[in-house]
Amino acid sequence: MTSTPDRSDPASIRLVLIRHAKSDWGDSSLDDHDRPLGERGLRDAPRMARELTESGFRPDVILSSTALRARTTAEAFAAELGVAVTLDPELYGASASTLLAIAAGSGALSVVLVAHDPGMSVLAGRLSGGRIEHMPTCAVATFQWDTRDWDVVDSIEPTDWTFDSPR
Image (cartoon, rainbow, N blue to C red; front, side, top):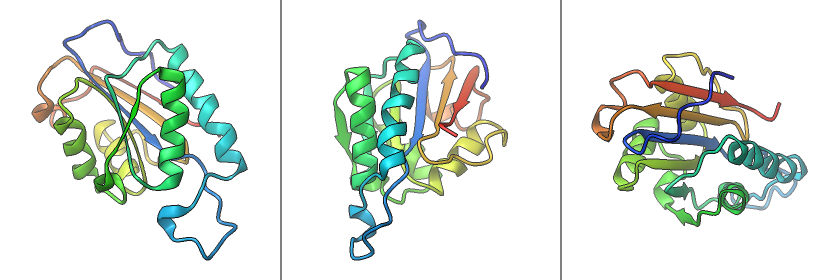
């Protein structure tokens, strides 16, 4: 994990990418969208949420995919962070570009996205200059830029970023 970003600067854009926690594959009759979290996911999500909360981070908004496993993960983070979850169906299966556009379109400077791979890993890799190669389930990547302009975050290096995983 890298150093913790300075979260006191209200002029900074802060983006947190959270890949949904480990899902349960036990019921093959379920549609992919309806898969719940498995035992490990139910254990990891609250733990990772506590770690993010203990870092002092407080988002303006939590945006989540409508898939059950993402919603449940987002709710664990929302309970710890004290922020309501907003569901966005476009986050289900979203590309890296769509994920970033949704964060930018939120109108907030401090955004948590809870979504899926491969989009999450691609975006985390892009924003970290290739240093994050993969977002395992329930991984948390934070990025901060000294700007209020979402249009430039994909073209400038973040001033700081972190990566944490339950594994």
